[in-house]
Amino acid sequence: MDSLTDHLADLVADVDATLLFSPTSSFYDRFADDGVEVVVVAPENDVDAETFVELPLPFDNVKDRIRFGIEGAMDEGLLSEGDEVACVVSVFDGGSDAVIRVTVDETIHTGIYDLFANSRAEPSVIRDVFEVAIELGQKGQKGKPVGALFVVGDAGKVMNKSRPLSYNPFEKSHVHVGDPIVNVMLKEFSRLDGAFVVSDSGKIVSAYRYLEPAAEGVDIPKGLGARHMSGAAITRDTNSTSIVLSESDGLVRAFKAGELVLEIDPEEY
Image 1 (cartoon, one colour):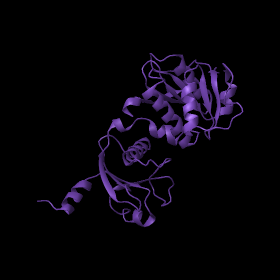
Image 2 (tube, rainbow, N blue to C red):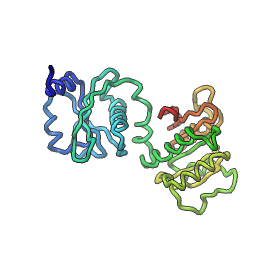
Image 3 (cartoon, helix red, strand yellow):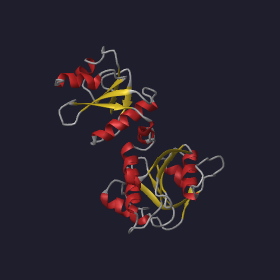
Image 4 (cartoon, helix red, strand yellow):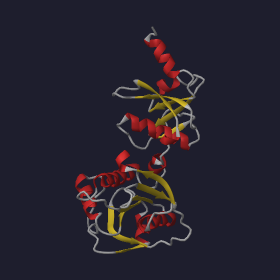
């Protein structure tokens, strides 16, 4: 019968890379001469690792943390499909206490990393807006499908390239996305036409905005309508990110620099 030591040896045998999630300097040094590529995944490169992937959000869920780290490493060209990876993570407080072996495949590469790590707005703001869109997609409004468009970041330019469709309920307020009460307001206002505009720091600047960027040269998948077109176009003309919930197919899509970077089914998220 195999011993526990044998089983653990099999777990890390022949891996192509080791991902260390937020290691201490002393722990990182133990892997430096291991002969396997070591990638540090952490909020900051405090250990001066040669290969580093930024982890802009804490991700309390270990599975989400690992998926995010692997996707970031794929974006950086450090991992590719078929690689075997040993992920050293902390499940409980107090340092690295678990090793999880993962086979890299393209299903991990969703676009989430690029959305959170490489957007102008704070990652936590992108996450909060994204989660509002996901919840709207899951529950709708009073049981009915609903569409919504959120433009996040570079709010000044976005406002200059749009016009109001109605009174702005957030004009004199200082509310931020992520507050549970504010999120309820966003879901309620999503029933009406127009885009929400959210600042880099999460302040809700406006609702009911009609976006007016030129659509020429913007290429979006066939079958997507005006909401997606304007959402994509505004990100080409500004340094913003658009998160769009489709009323017709219920998918959440994100656009940056005029291109589709993410497409997710809220029911599978």
